[in-house]
Each structure stands twice: as structure tokens, then as C-alpha cells.
Image 1 (tube, rainbow, N blue to C red):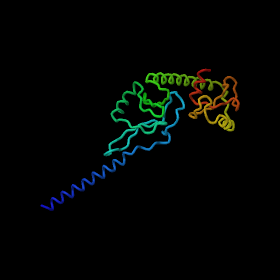
Image 2: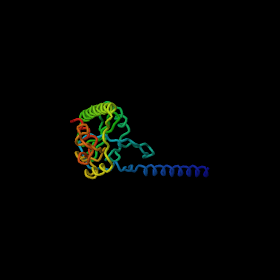
Image 3: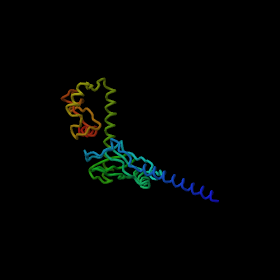
Image 4: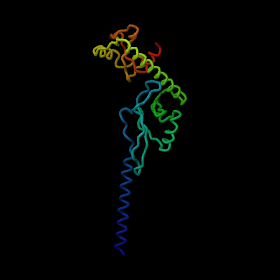
Length: 221
């Protein structure tokens, strides 16, 4: 009888040690996820609504190896997200913008399966208006591109190429940034005087613009 009791006690002690080990490992795993380079906090460069291709949700294993959900974006370190709230946001974002996280003056929105960040203090209705405006501009840009393509096909003339040396000099001159807003995102070489109006591909007639500023210029021509 005494041997049976000792066996039971030894088994209980072993079970307690296993539970302590499991709890210890799970507590160790509750450390905050590392911050990717793109998610390190940075200054707010613009109040405009910008698409964030780095933004996403992810999970790791926390206490007792249960899933912990996080959101991360450009300039946004991992932010804890309630699992139930994540499910609600997933449904809501199909119809209206949902605020996901805010840090260092930036706010991230989730809308129609796309993520955006802004530092202008926008409301959900502001985000909808800006997204719809962007979609209209993108459609107009696409229509112009198709029209230009059709014109190119009907004409033997081709848009003059920009030499590598000229590109390097323009890039160095403008510091690798958009001359209008200062960003280094989606940089393009723009003709100050459009080629269609007789502009040449010389250093004096070229400048660096981001895709957004270049598009705005084209819409105003």
C-alpha cells in the first residue's frame, strides 16, 4: 500500500513539474514579437492617405500556446489585436473603413481588403471620399494610357528614351526624392514640358516626381 501511495505521489510530482515547465515555456513565448525594419516608428511625412503594402495581421503563440493576434504596418510596430475584434473588423471593412491602429501620429485603416495610413486625423467618411477619388483618378489614368497606346500603335513615332547617364545626373541633382512632396516612394522621371508638347529628354527638362504627384500633374494638364 505504501508503495502505491509513493508511486501516486511521484506521478503527481512529475505532472506538476511538467505543468511548471509548460507554463514556463509559454510565459517565455509571451515576449512581444520583434519589430520588422519597415515597422520601426518614423516621422509623419504627409497627411495624405497612402496605401500600405506592408500592413498585415499575424499571430504567434502566447500563454499555454494560445494564439495572439497582432497588426503591423509601415512605421507601426506590432500592435496587439483582440481576436474577437479582428473578426468584427474583417466583416465591417467590406462596407466601411475600420480604424485598426494608431501610433506616432499615424493611423491605419482597413477598407475593402486594403490597408491605408494617414496622419491627417481623417474620419471614416474622409477615407471613403479619398479612396473613391483615387479610384476615379486611377481609372482616368488608365483610360489615358490606353488612348496613348492606341495612338502609338497608329503612329510610327515613339517616345524618346532617357539615357542612363541623364537619369543618374537627374537622380543626384534631385537627391533621389520627389521635387514636390519630398518622398522617395515610387519615384518616376517626369518631363517638365511633356513630350507631346515638344519637350525633350534632357537633364534640364527632367525632374523626379513620385507616382502620386506625377499623376496629379497629368490630371491638371
